[in-house]
Length: 295
Image (cartoon, rainbow, N blue to C red; front, side):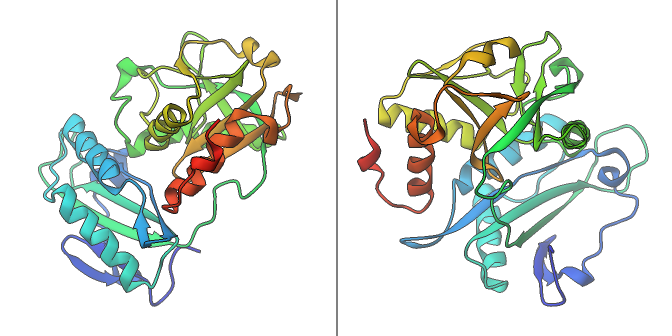
């Protein structure tokens, strides 16, 4: 699914066949999850192949490395260039791109002195396809922000995400919705969460959620479309009487939510302001004008 005999990836300054790539079996990332990654998407836009918000993603990866004390030997511009080169070598236009920074061999509980950088890419449709999703409130909580670096995209943090998604599917849902340690709604396992009520969008504040690049884009779209959007703490009970909701993230893009714990919303998706945000997002990533959706 992710590579074949011809697939090429970037690894420590070289472009190599994925089947020949060597990752040290004693990497600290492999043993302890102490590494960082990003997820980017490229699109076949009206101006050619474009990696959406490429600098934002690599700035965040650089910041994640700094927060964890992992040395990163490449600049943001270099990482962007390597990513475009990976797309070119694999003849990809619309693709998902995965940069990964792995710590060097280190079995002690200390920060790594060296790190490897890998960038791979593959064709990958939207995480949930074209459908809306059924969501269940997860029994797993978003990790306490004092237990680590909540704003860093750390490999090991996603054990929590895997457990939450697996539990949701076992309960018959498509995805889970995690609460924080105080019982407030935080986010999806791998996406930020928004809900809509009475002409305003709401989302959890930063602090114990990942500061998503797509989340930031939603705020910018709402500003352009004159749609009010607010950050606030809210309980899951408050989601029973809302107009709509969606997940957003690089993999999920803008994914409409059909129901939460079996409770549907007051408006059909295409009658919500959230749908206008989704339409504007599609036009934005393809470099098209979205002025027609301005209300």
